[in-house]
Image (cartoon, rainbow, N blue to C red):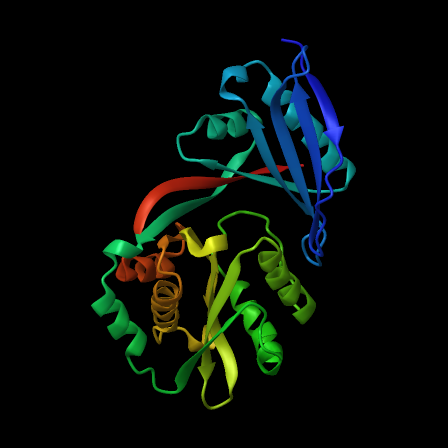
Length: 293
């Protein structure tokens, strides 16, 4: 099959990345596949690019994906990137395609879902209301309140030692502009960002947080974006406490939600135990694959 690869103009550019795009079409001009290459621009991540390739099932094994991959790899190299990452579900054709293209599995993720209709609310309520001496919870919707902004920025480095396998993610440098831009991006999509944070009573500082993004209209499944606790405050059950509170708030404020989705690295047994305790059930595995350029 004759395949034409056309570079497209992608207007999506944020404070932390920009995208390149390609469309694959057959001899009659019918679209048969696409590729998007996200080039991270934030401090500490300018070495990294992320790839998403989609090929129509009927057009696979006809070199469509290979042509799109070649275009994306060439562009990433030209832009000076050293690492290219892509995700594929365990056992999928996409995983075989990436492996054949020279990618290696650098991290395995377990995806899990809590069906709100089946949740154990007495247990969740007990977990959310259990006392944690020296700590208290606070919460907000959308952008972080100004009076908490500085300490929330400082708490974000709790993500720095999150298990990432062998993926060359680099280091995300958080400041208040980046945090507010992320909240604004969620709002622009029509979604709602809800954050629960743990505060050290002695210092008044945020020492942990969990984020939940609820889809537009409050139906379907919400997605956990991040949960982390600063190292000096781990071992006190704060992650479980915060997530239990977030679940109860989601149920109270969005009665039509079907469930909550989360993903956890397989080399992060602590967070997997937290999710198990809260009632999340695994749905599938996915692999973060990396190509060294």
